[in-house]
Image 1 (spheres, rainbow, N blue to C red):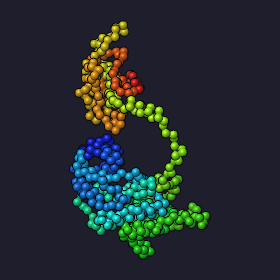
Image 2 (tube, rainbow, N blue to C red; image 1 turned 30 degrees about the vertical axis):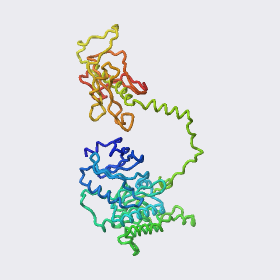
Image 3 (cartoon, helix red, strand yellow; image 1 turned 45 degrees about the vertical axis):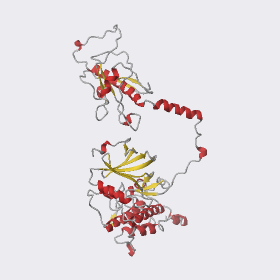
Image 4 (spheres, rainbow, N blue to C red; image 1 turned 120 degrees about the vertical axis):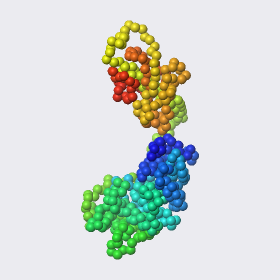
Length: 480
């Protein structure tokens, strides 16, 4: 567990996979979107700590799933057994919507639901022919692209991650039964946005009556009889009206290709039926009609090029390149300047705070005395928002050594120029040796415009500050 906390956006694994976004954390595993720096493309990384007892089964399941060549499964691109304490599985990255996010907004139309589940069933049938079973098909493992294509995740590894016993595995017959049952539940959820057997992926449980699952047409109006019948032939124990059960993924896919037509033709022929619900609908909850189709069902049309903005001129492109060149260099030194100003503020706060109740010991400052150059007695780093409380303390003294060629640098941050978006600022604490009245402050900063804050410590402070709540702001500079 401790090794996994060390990974963050900006880390590079195996010398090529640059971590970008943490997409999911489930069952003790992490899923990242990363950039393959060798091939310059996005990939998905599924990782599990090598100390996890499921790690060997996780890697073995990934290797076995590579034998399935159906393009609807996200293919395995690489496997790393131990990279920074993690077993790593690299898959193709798909820009798509998880099905559960769509179903949380509204059910799918009958034809669309039948098409999606038939695609999944045909892919599962191909996996069964090679002896591979998914065993954890849920709406979250189904991805829908804007083009309408279907992608499936978790083949070979989802079942391993969902169990606490890596040695436990279902037999071939039981594993195939789980996949067939999951296809029926998936079709049921697509048309009513409920999951048979209990809540899954945020979807509520499907209603039951006298211990028997209600048919989709009893839960929601508008479900076609074909889809309702296919659900019953998969999930019915036994199916109604002595219908033949569907026991293979291939037969489910073939049946759904011929089913799922909406009942809109009834409305065209009989306008009086508009708004009439199914005759056998059991209203356990209100039927909410969505305002429009959920995202991913009807791909948005591209905007005509005639409405696109004009491309930048040669002069504008040159101006942008010059601006990037001016602001891109010495970015770390810019942060040094920010930290220096903040540190000086903290130092002044500390100096003022060292004033105690014994005011007689302090000599009054004469307004007529000439100005003097104050020398810092000591300089310490100031990192109130960090986890370790240190910010290159060995370089802090270089900020006040009088040598313009040396200076204090912050730690190195990745992912974002603003201290990696991990903290609002860092700085230094300057000890002037006692209470002082400061007329002006002069700081040498390298880099472009930056923001500066100067603070003074609270009266009576007897120790260097550790938090901004003990400081009072006395100066603010922006874009210096």
